[in-house]
Image (cartoon, rainbow, N blue to C red):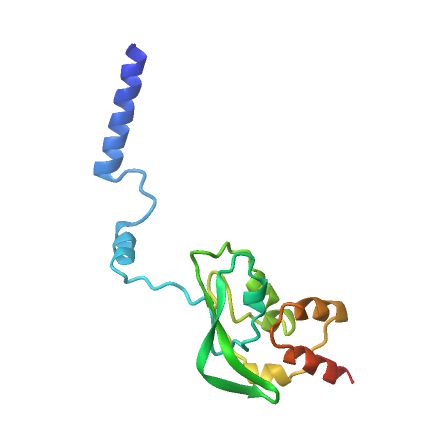
Length: 164
């Protein structure tokens, strides 16, 4: 019985100490207040300027966290390529599998940072218009694997034309 009372008192003391004196706190109170007041902005997950609107990320997402949102006005990127939609990432459904990033043609075909990333998309320095017209050299089997997830196959058509 003495042990039970001792355990109960030790637990109560450690909880009181933790609650009232903020011991064992893992987040800074300033950061917590900034988050609650809306002063901390979430990282950008989709770079709309660099996206080519192929829909590969939405097609490959295992949880349906990515939906394609129609643009108010279509954007011409290159001959035969008009961007009509851009991805929208719902972070509450995202399981951070990175498939959207890995299947993005900008990353998979050209080796540049993808226009979508579950954590933070970062900086993008190349125009997607320039990329679409740029020939790329990767194995045929990889192109075929990636192309099955793309809604618009123009990038693949350009690949085939550059080989001829």
